[in-house]
Image 1 (tube, rainbow, N blue to C red):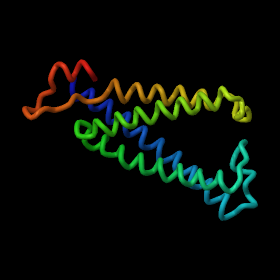
Image 2 (cartoon, one colour):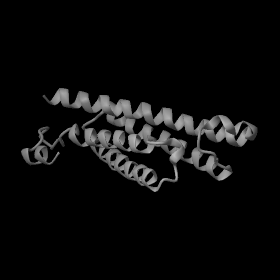
Image 3 (cartoon, one colour):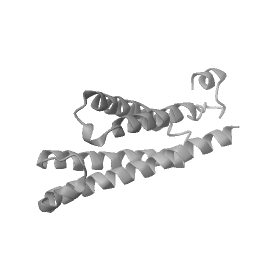
Image 4 (spheres, helix red, strand yellow):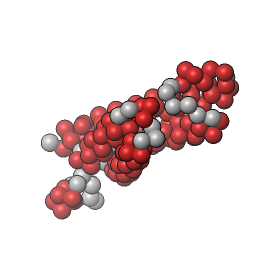
Length: 151
């Protein structure tokens, strides 16, 4: 059972790494297109922005790359990277709340239900990181029953 649990955790971590890198790349591309080629802003999507928005896109893209790079360790050694997965779950929950507030405010009506769908996906991923988290390994190499029940 332990191997299957770690396999699921690795697969979830790998999927999340891919999503973080792809989203980070898209945001960095948006920053470069909006900053280096300001005349081509119309192709970036339904929500228009100015130079501050492009700056924040670049910052967020770089942060997503860094987050993905940290999460790679959970793919390589899941029992050693439990805290990375827990921090990822926390970040996903905070991002889901952020998106639900944005959707509820009505300020982002151009994107319709996208923030709500993104929030639901992030909450499901966070649940997966908590549910599939590998047990803590003690000095003897075994997880205690109490730690298994907490996870």
